[in-house]
Length: 173
Image (cartoon, rainbow, N blue to C red; front, side):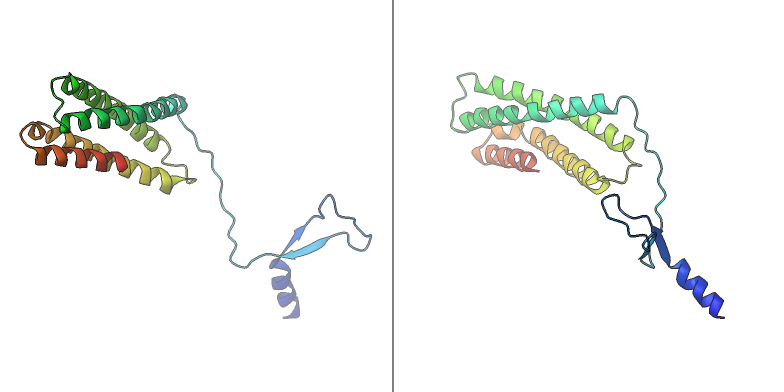
């Protein structure tokens, strides 16, 4: 019985080598360190990404940084239209920049979703990546809604303000 208890006590300790900077006394040839009883060794496995993952990530990042000045230009152009400056070509520029935003959002959605799928087996940062993907899909839906109510913006100022507010909400997401 005593031998069994001694074996159980010995099994609950891990043997750790002395640190390289510590001075070792001849009587301290081995240090015994208690391991937490609930420690389960984690199995490690290799995570393999496709060779296009980094290329898509680069395209996605460039698209994201390109989006910022487009948002600014679209806001300024839309604001000019809200103030009644339709004769100066603001309407055509507003539509052109909106088309550019839609194209860039499509590219970012495809590259982002594809990389999200490629990284599905990587546990590090999974929650952050998934939240990013979900919020960007919500933003995509907001921009689709913005485009859908864009024609109504021509008819009244209330519709134009709603169009602007939906667009700003989508940008904010």
